[in-house]
Image (tube, rainbow, N blue to C red; front, side, top):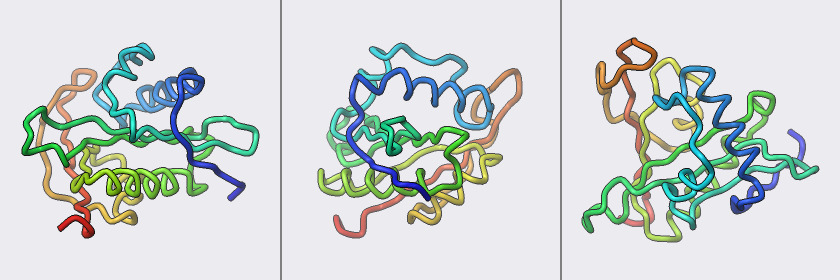
Length: 165
């Protein structure tokens, strides 16, 4: 793998981050979303201290990871939902693993004890990546939502921090 640097996501990365998100949406197995949000909407939905990009040696964004709170209730202050997206041309090069490793370090340093997500079962590459990063499958939400007119299942995954228990 060529050099990859994981760093904080900044507004200057917005166009490339949203383009990578568009690839995920267009492929059909990454999200229920059908349109890319504006940068303002994306920015407002993500916790500012846990937004990362993976950059190549030329500063191009290869992928990104970010978290959102799962609830406003204080009991869930240490639980977040995450997303990780890798540009199709950068897959299989360790970008996703680098992003997840950095995201786990960032969230643990902040006292976040659970990082979770829902993944379409057909997204086997994402499920394998997360398993290698210590995530476990906690269940399947069957026919939880319609996506392009088709009922879809979602595999729930989580990583509980061993350092915070």
